[in-house]
Image: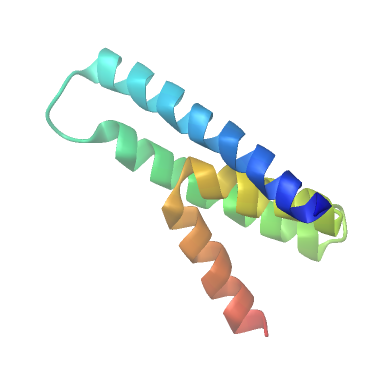
Length: 92
């Protein structure tokens, strides 16, 4: 149950971050090209790579990895979730 709570809390945080960053970028650059989506996906992909690296080095516990990779970054961008799951499949 604790793992579900970590993912849920992380997902809520990631979704709020996505909304806030997206609204800020859209307000800054205006409508037209979806710059906010591009920025969120690029940033999320970079961060998922950093989380995976820290995990592989043993710097993150399994719970921290779940909270950050699946929860926060999964809520932040679905593209990072796809990247994480693909990497996990390749490692298995």
